[in-house]
Image (tube, rainbow, N blue to C red; front, side, top):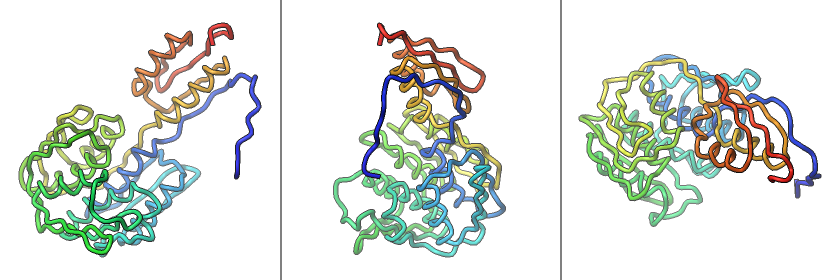
Length: 293
């Protein structure tokens, strides 16, 4: 597809169930690698390209994965992980695949993770992750475009991020749940998706407090258990439809997500003349009249 052709002057109206959040589903899928026994079931997993790439990564590592696109239900059995390397062919397809570093290191004691594009160590977002695992006692080196992390057992510690890092916070959570001793993350990312990942890990038996705030505390547990968990709705998708309805003066009813995740957006849309009504599992929005748009 070379371009989108959009014909305007038509109001966007209708009802829609919002899909699961990709930015929560991906780190939760990778978190299932921490569960050594049993089959974990994830619901509300959106059928997106990155999801299928994540499945390929898990299967390469040795996990058994099934995914029903229509029902949006995934099962993962990571009992028999046998690989400690995430190859470039898979890693290059999405940056989020670097999330496998923590789970592989915890499960195998050594992880070989290809950097997207095979780049060398330097200033980039993954520095937060590498530095975080070094603080937890891992030895981290780089060789031929791969990050090599080694640690027989991670040790809890205090992690300070220079700026909030979504992927960094999640990766350190993976390493901390089974580490020796308490871990504290300062200046952690506060996104709703971080809370969803922490909620999943807690349901599986982890002891994580403070998710959704800049200060997260993780008390270690011996092991996690297989669970069933529903991925939260995608606030970005919901916000996109809300904006479209507001711009065109339409009316939409959106379900399947937590409207509080868009509280600032909702406030600004109301200021702009939109009418918003909160529902049990979503909201309805009516755009402003034309003279207010």
